[in-house]
Each structure stands twice: as structure tokens, then as C-alpha cells.
Image 1: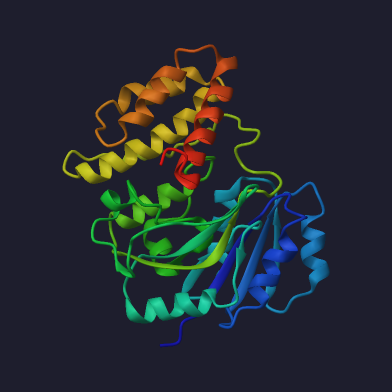
Image 2: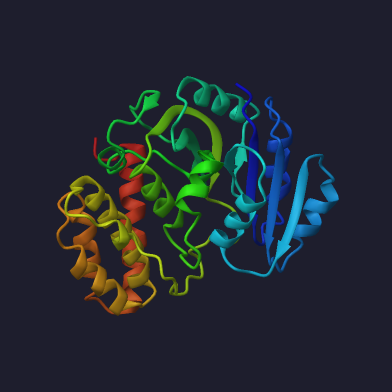
Length: 309
């Protein structure tokens, strides 16, 4: 089977990282049909860096800033390959990545989403995305995704026909836009997963999306997916929205966070997150971020360093 990939990379102020990212694409053992870089109104030298690399098969598209979803959608609309391989401008693929994805598609045709394992690069070091999952079709995506991190945008490949049928990324959504798409796809198509780790998720890059967060204005919401007949999906939707609301609360958007607290009080599998949100919403805004950051730091150290065992 001849599998053609269009690599789509949204770019916004990643001048320090984009050369390494594109270098990883150029080194692939399975050559993509094209690489589409959409510069989303960068104010640094990101676009000039791409032009200066002069890599074959790389096409740079410039557009006014519209957000990561708008940039990805533009790249998808321009794509000619049968499969859209998503890659963020500060992440990295090892040389075998597309080769392994192509093999996965060959073994499990007809899926709506193909996801691979990944490594997380943090200031403290490099950590694998740990999972006990085996390669294959995910039996119940929503139930599984509540306990295992199955997807990270730079390790996901989606048939272009799926985007043509279901639509693209939710423009205007600043947090969880990728999970929104995974939810939309998993409600309709089987999802395929492999634990092989051939991509790197970089948490040390400049311009991380939540560093200077302003409240999103978008017509899209995870609430669209709520259905009394799909309890597992509803639990996953609640988890996604509560995760976003924690950020909203930290940045002082208390009314929006309280609405999520009220709407998703039905959840049973993410009660800890719901209680964190409930507590934050009742604290002075200046206390919220330090408290949540400290909590995240401690729980991460416990889980990675075994401090309690």
C-alpha cells in the first residue's frame, strides 16, 4: 500500500526550535510527500529560519495570527497526502517515526486516528510516556484515555478523509483543541495505538501556549459531545473541561470556572480534579497559581521519583 504523508506544522514564535524540528523531518527514513509549515503571524524570525534552511519538500505559508487551530486547518486544507502527520514546531521526530506510522497503518487500516508513544523532555530530564498498552485497536478509547495518556499532538496521524468528513480543529479554542478533535474522531472511528516512542514532546521550548493565557472566545465546547447514552465519553469530556477550567481559575476567570464546576459535577472518575477546581474557585486569585503549581510539582515528583515508596 502506497501511503502518502503530508506533515503539517503550525509555527508561531519558535525561531529557536523550528530548525531542529524540520531537521528531524528531513532525516525520516520514510519520505513524506510534503511538509507544510504555516507561519501564524510570528513576530520573531521563525519564518526566516524556515526559508534559510531551504529544505526540499518544505512549503512555507504565511497568514495573520489566528491561533494554532487556524494554522493547522490551513495546512490540512492545503495538504495533498492521504494522511496528515501532525507535528508542533518545538517537538521532534526520530528518523524512524514515519516509517513506523506507515507500518501501523498497514497493519490496522481504516482507523480514524493513529497514535504512537512519545518521550517528554522536561528541565529535570527525559521521561518516557509510560503505558502498559499494547499495539492495536483501542477497545474503549474514552475509558482508556481516562487512565492512560494515549495521544500527544506530535505523535498523531489522521487520514485526510477524516478531516474532510468531520471538520478540523476548533478555531478560537486555546486549551484542549487537540483533545476536542480526538473526541470527535473517537466517537465515529476506531483509534489505533502503538507504545513505540519515536517522538519527543518538548516542555522546555519558548512561548508555551499557557504561559500568558487569555480567556478564549470560541463557539466550540466539549459540551457538544455530552450524550446521556455515552457515559464513558461524558466522563472524558468532564475531565477535559475540568482541566481547562483549572487554568481559567488560576488566571482569574472565576465565573467561567464556576460554570464548569457546576455543569460537570456529575463526573465520577475525576473527582479529585473537580475538588481541586472547587477549592481554587473559592480562594483569592493570587493564591491559586502558586498552590496549583506546588501541587503539580509534588505529585510529579512522587510519581516519577517514588518519594512515597
